[in-house]
Every structure is written in C-alpha cells, then in structure tokens.
Image (cartoon, rainbow, N blue to C red; front, side):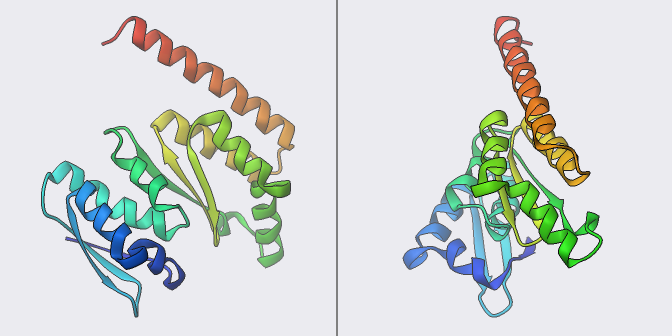
Length: 182
C-alpha cells in the first residue's frame, strides 16, 4: 500500500461525479483507493495485477498535479508510459521570478504549453509550482529539456526549434523500430 497526498482542490476531480472517476481508476489500474477528503491523503492498495497496481499512485499524483483523469489514465496504455514532475519553484529566486518562469512555460494564451504537447506527443500541465509530464520516455525527456531551456532563459523560438528536431528524431526512431523490430 502506498500513500499519496494531493491538494484539497483536486480531490473532487479524483473522486469524480458520484465516485465515477475513482471507480474507473480502481477498475483499470486494479487498485483500491481510500481517500481522506480532510487531509488529501490517498491510500492506494493494489488488488489485482501488481504491475498495473504500480501505476495507481502515479495516476493519483498526476490528477493531484492538475491532469485530467483521462490524461492520467494514459499511464496504463503501455509499460513505457511515465509521469514526471519538474519543480519550477526550485529554480525560482523569489515569488516574482516564479510567476515569470511559470508565465514563460505557459506562454501567451497557453501556446507554449500547447506546442510542447503538439511537438512531443506528451501531455503537459502546469499547476501550482510544478510542470507535470505524461508520455513515453523520449517524449518526457524532450519536454523536460525544453522546459529547462525556457527556465534557463532561452528564447522561445530556440526551444520550439529544439522540440521540432526532437519530434523528427522520435519519428525516425519509431520508423526504424517498426522496420527492424528487436
């Protein structure tokens, strides 16, 4: 059994209307969730396939970090899917710097965050002081590197060019894998 704590304002999203989301996670991830709505503490107990059950805590954490349940459930698509968090606060000098760095990651009208998703295939959410990523390892790595570039002050155009190159590399790797598997 694992314990995960999520923000109060995300408990309703985790539970869903009439408990629907919670039941879907329990069914698909083969876990049982015990949610303490006072503290935000969620006990995640594997009740079926232990490999599926290992993804349960990450699904709960992802929802806690701002992902929609359907995006968090992408973690069950295959064994390669992973969830990673980039702590924006860790690289910010103060509250104003944090706000500026977050704004650069989100971009005007959310365009930078959207482009990170479009160019990599990963799901990307900026919530609180974190950037969350769900995807395959190469997708997650590309978003993390792009985000680090933005946080280090790189021009957005340079980051978009980097992500476009990574997308081309990922597509070529995927093609060569399908041509010559294993």
